[in-house]
Image (tube, rainbow, N blue to C red; front, side):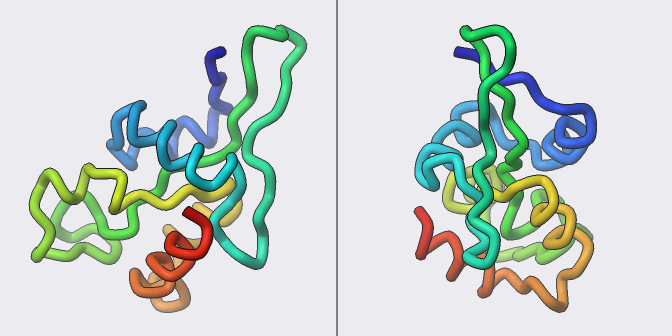
Length: 118
C-alpha cells in the first residue's frame, strides 16, 4: 500500500527531512491519529484505488533539524535530530499551528503529547 500526499502536506513534509521509515514508524505509533490530544484526527484514509491510501499527516520535528529553526536544540546530535525520537505525528492543521506558534507549542509540550500517544 502506498500513500499519496496532498500538495500542501507534501510541502510541509519536505521541510521535515525525516526519511520514509521514520515517517511510517511515527504514524504507526499513533495509529495514524494526530498526536495533539485535543485533536486526535485520523490522518489516513481510502482513495478510489484500493491499493493506495491518502495521508494527511506529517512527521513534524519537535526540535528543528538545522540551526535557526524553530525549537532548535544544539544538544541533539545530527542523528538524533533525524531520528524517530524527534518526530511527532500531527494532522496537517495541527502541524501548521505547531510550526507557526513556538511560544504556544514549546518542545516540552510536544514531547508530552508524544509520550501520551506513542
